[in-house]
Length: 138
Length: 138
DNA sequence: ATGTTATTGTTAGCCTACTAACTATATGGT
DNA sequence: ACCATATAGTTAGTAGGCTAACAATAACAT
Image 1 (cartoon, rainbow over the protein chains, first blue to last red):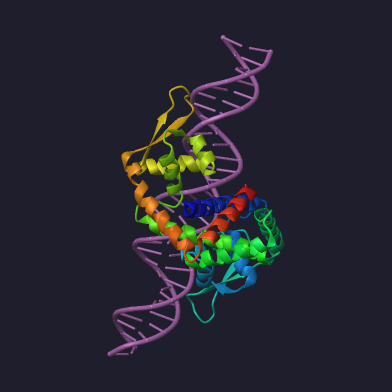
Image 2 (image 1 turned 135 degrees about the vertical axis):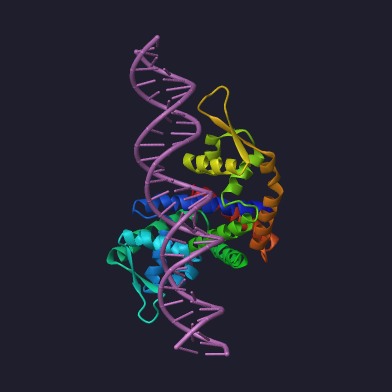
């Protein structure tokens, strides 16, 4: 069945993408997932952990643990909010900010590789169908 | 850029698919990834751990650990090969074999959800493009 | 026959990611 | 003012996935 194949291909691509990212990010001393976290922070700094949960679509303990690691790497720091003692806001250090370009290079490399031999009009179609799938599975 | 968007969508879909699988598999007391391992074994039993590495595209320690867990669940057992003392072969138990149908149901549900509103001819196109991407990133 | 090399799998340690149970702070009702 | 409830993060414990270092067996060369 075509549908089975599409799901299996998606699984396969996910696994392989993850492996490729892992290999490339290792040279920057990063793990897969951490790049996504940094990406959110490059877009917007000083955000709460709760907001990071929503935007990265993962659970609070994942955020806590990942931030502890990134903090120990010196890429990030946390500061208690002044008006609400429960929330802590997350900021990038200079070192964290400097990782933007090398990580973006990795993403660019991966997407070039991914889309090799796929024509511009096919890419448009692909984006449309993938947007649909992304909405479907939420 | 379209290319960025496609990569990002793929990342997003991967993460969400994983979450969905996790939620559904939990009801069978399985974790994401274990279903892939079982899938391989449903297709072919008595295979070596090395072969599982290749087919699941992951590293030996991952196999060792996952098999230990699945063994503790009583879904799988290992037996030393007669002719080669280094290799151990992996077999399904009855309990492990019985999980095939419920897991397949989960996959079917997920792929239906995934492809909702996508026309048959679009699915054909999608499969073709995804095959291409899968080959590209190996 | 013996020592070197290759292959198979394991162990230790790191990381993301999850649930369940918890702490600490805010808020809202009476 | 006080107590119940909601919200934000943390801790403990489980599991997949990885690398690096290791043990055990097999194969090969001399």
